[in-house]
Length: 245
Image (tube, rainbow, N blue to C red; front, side, top):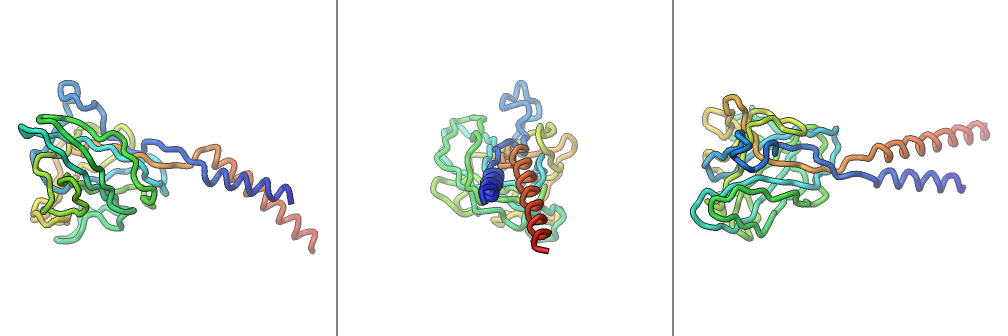
């Protein structure tokens, strides 16, 4: 009985032990345009969408997000950011078909941000609800800069002063396709079809949103504890079966 209790404790500890680590990072070169030649913005206010292939195998609980942005207007601006993650990305979706499907968790609302005139900044790693569990290796993320207090994606509450930053260098962690999307037709959502829709591919170098994604991944030690505990339970079960027979 004591051995069973001990093993159960090992399994419980192993199952609950995970580390927060950066699973996608496209901030290479930093925020200084003089030292990061790959940093730029599109000059367009809109809903934006990008993909990120994470550096660890799924499932991963996404729990942190960092986003770069710029205020190219002549006055200070206060704003919020809405973020929605998706399990599936299809840039070849047909006309009117969403590019991101199978949402991960709820919409994340990053609030209380202020950018001075001409600012180039980032949110820093912001904690997000721990219900965003991805079951795929590549996720999509949709973002929109909105007026304070807004909680719904769409053009009605869009903040016209703030735009996301892009980085044309290869991600430091993980990878991303050369495609990105924005709500070109002002429909309040990101849909497919390159001819009349929202998908854009920059010629080399590629364009990807300046962002980081943090996730909870199992510790190697916890994986070992789980393996040891599982092997112990299995061997004991076999002994019990032999004794019974």
